[in-house]
Image (cartoon, rainbow, N blue to C red):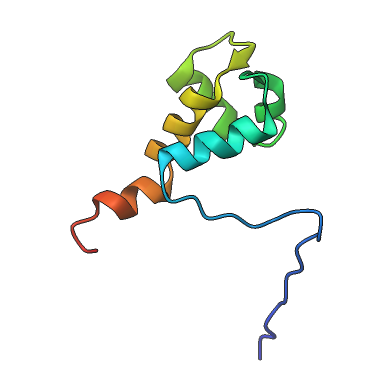
Length: 89
């Protein structure tokens, strides 16, 4: 019989559930107030396939992204946008 696993979130982190592209942008601006995000910082959080996809979608050879463009990208590529446009709810 399988046992349920309990996951603990490090208390220094806060779980967020953004409800709009603008909210994602605001979160990114809070994290990166100089209005630019080093591409390598984003890549360090991703696996090779995700890196290839984001480079394909947003351009190869980028050193920086803006919070606005990443917010739009994450919103449109994530499940959040799918929920908003779903005919089921």
